Image (cartoon, rainbow, N blue to C red; front, side, top):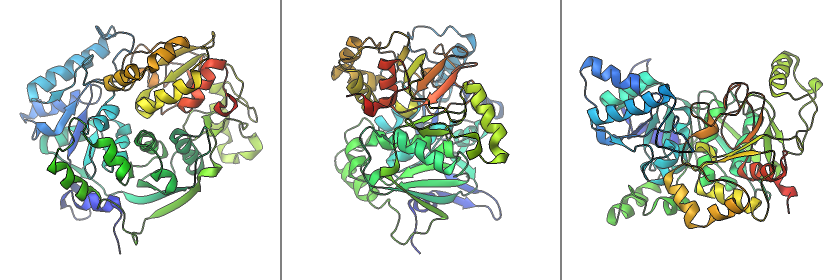
Length: 464
């Protein structure tokens, strides 16, 4: 029986297996940010342990980083976290991409764009959206703080082996439909727990035709289905994206690496624990209506009626709508929005800004909308300027901000006020995620852009 891509990477990194217990897995890359790493470094310090392989660790602040200026962090807790990360990196000899420097950005944007994340790697970070890096053909998993300490101390981690799932998407996406819509559609079909305990491989003609930015978006959202990781087999699109980037192999080493990476695919006779297939033609631009990413509909559809919800789920369904101030059977298209957010490790890349600009060009931001347009890295920001996208945005009444996690989560100044409705390209719409009492509708950059210029939730296909 053939092997899946996940199985090949997993087997290639097993150090030892514990009978009736976990597997000791070697880790190629550990990413660390300011929120989940302090206690891990304290553990090493308390035990008198050094970082085993500091060259395998990359650290940068992103969650607490302001997007309006980066001279000072006014929140004392956030400032302490960022300062502590810097001190820990200095003490333990770890590369630190400091706030405000050209190397900094959201850790899940910077890793792939610098080719610090490569096909065949095992990658971990104390952050659930580490699944993003699976888009390059890596096994990338979010871990807890105690596990961060494990990896710092040993470059290994103890893990129970997940099951495997393949999600196939076949066909051509309709105009106005993006990778974000594909992810939101899959979540609505499988639910936010439908892939719990699995590593998901995305496959099919639709996936092969996605850009790397699209693949990164899709892999980023894998965790929102409960999966352990999301992974996409590397191909010519992957290699073209990585070639020439700062930490990519060079010259003969590059040619040798690509030759090896081409073997990173599931065998034709590989068997998965679960497999599902979706048709691209069935996917429309998507929005969410509830307080989890799986509570979604097509932008031109209505929220489900109460009688369409299983009786056991009705109380939870109504609780979500009560928080969101929506009603069963109601259409959201045309509802006024207060905030529009473009960014996050989900949609903070250059392709996302190109898409947003393509909609707002020649139009103006609606007066009732506060818009935060936040690149995922300084490299992305420079690309925006080099391509003149910043001029298009400025002419339409938008401001380009500084790289940060920004309004993805309420850990920096970009908080949505209580009761206000935000339409956002981020990954989570949990209660209070964007600020205490904030209400969040998740959508693609195209849908957010259309809503930003009309001032209401808008189907991007209807803007000509």
